[in-house]
Image 1 (cartoon, rainbow, N blue to C red):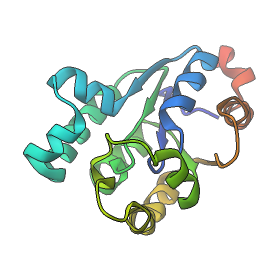
Image 2 (image 1 turned 135 degrees about the horizontal axis):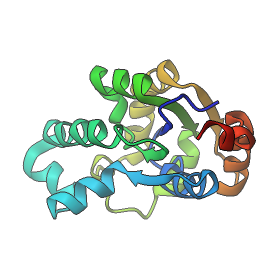
Image 3 (image 1 turned 180 degrees about the vertical axis):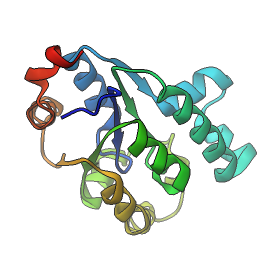
Image 4 (image 1 turned 30 degrees about the vertical axis):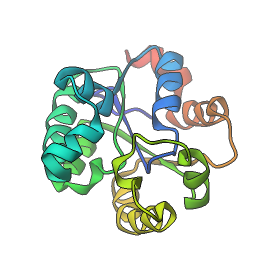
Length: 179
């Protein structure tokens, strides 16, 4: 069931499908869709890799936390977060307090497959992206699990099948009575 505020936060590692599934889920629920990373890029006029280069990860996390707080004030919105949005305690508390948190879970092998040709992910611009992904998962997965109201595995699934499962878990058939 979606909490009263009507905000739905999608958390999970890069390559889990947060943006793709988020758009489809928002369409299905007739909610607005917001992608934290895209909002940061649009408002700052620069891309995420540039922010990482110029401000470092800490500077990016400051922007991310601020954007998350702003977007979470809306009702009936699906918010796709960045993979590291859970790193800050204040961001985790905000998501738990302001909405329903869905952890889109995926394996490291699936992340590697999905992000292999993506050059816009600053944390993967290393000589060994697989090790980076494993290390990130070890650090972040407990945080995803800590705040998740629902967890859905996305490996080897279409976005539509994930959204169907989410709608069932959220009681989407009953949403018209709530809003």
